[in-house]
Length: 234
Image 1: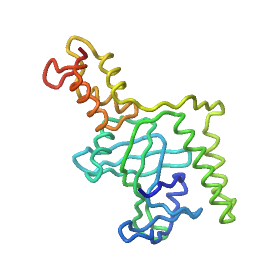
Image 2: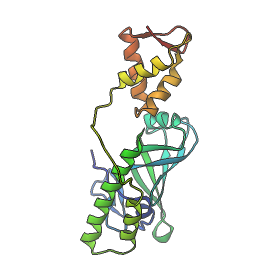
Image 3: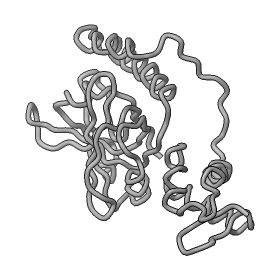
């Protein structure tokens, strides 16, 4: 799969040209002021706005310390759309998507067609800022530019917590996340499937992964449905 580029929102939104991506099927890449050729991007920031539903095109905005990315999600990415419906702004999210440009020159407008989106925490966001700052400075050094964009990087780095502590990294266990959600909602009526999926999404799962974890728990006999649409641990 094509690697995803890291750029800050202010730089991406300041792009004024596109270039051949080198693949007839891939379309054109958005070229940023520091020389990044963006076909796909990896973004982390605060989801500040969400409009629409998974039945149609959804629009959202993701803010990093320098500006805001415009996001769109449509039926080409049904899991991203389903997941986004469960995420209520404000929330830190990570997204991967295709760079889209409309217009040319000073009239060019950029956006991201989202392929995947998940909830993350402040630590993941701060790490993204650090890595994106590093990648941006490397590009600026290569093109010999240390002006306005370098100042942008400084501003972004000021948003990172000085006491940033990554801690141990552990794999996400979807079944454990859903089991914990059902334990918290294990009252007489249990927890609705929608609420269980929402808790899974809030813990960093895609909607499809949360739904599959529920089905796996049902199949394993660890939970049951006391009534239509409801789930309860055994």
